[in-house]
Amino acid sequence: MDIGQAAEIVAATAATGVIAGLSEDAARSAVTRVRQRIRAVFESHRRETAALDEAIDNAHDSRSIREFTRAIDEVAALDADFSEDLITWARKFQSSTGTGRIQVKADRDAYTSGGDMTFNQNLGEHS
Image: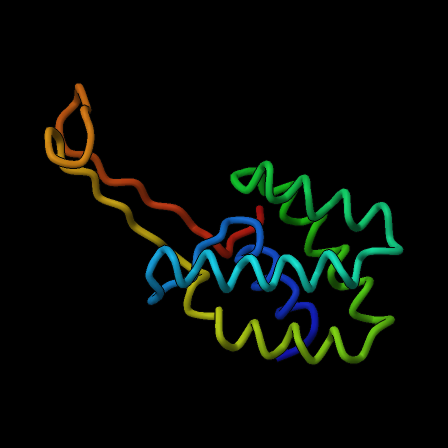
C-alpha cells in the first residue's frame, strides 16, 4: 500500500468517524486517537489543520475529503513516522471504506413518513 492510498483511507475514516466492525464507542475512541495524532502532526501547518477541521465538519462533502487527503499526503512526505502511522491505520481501517449500508425501520428506529428506508454511502469514493 502506498502513502496516497493510505491517506485516502485514513482521511475518509478520520472525517466520517466510521470504522467497520467496531462498536460505536470503540470506533469513536479509535477515531479520536487518530484525529489527535493528525492534529499534533499538523500543528505547525495551518492550512492542513484547516483541511482537517473542514473534513470533520463536512464529512459528506467529497471536496473536503479530497483536500484533507492532499494535506495528509503532503505532511506524510515530510514525516517518516507519520507515514508509518498512516499505513498502519489504513491497513486496520481498509475494510471501513467502500460501501456502507444503514437500514432504518419505520416506527422502531425513527419516524419516517415513507416507511422503511435504506441509505447507501460510498465511504471511500472521492468524486
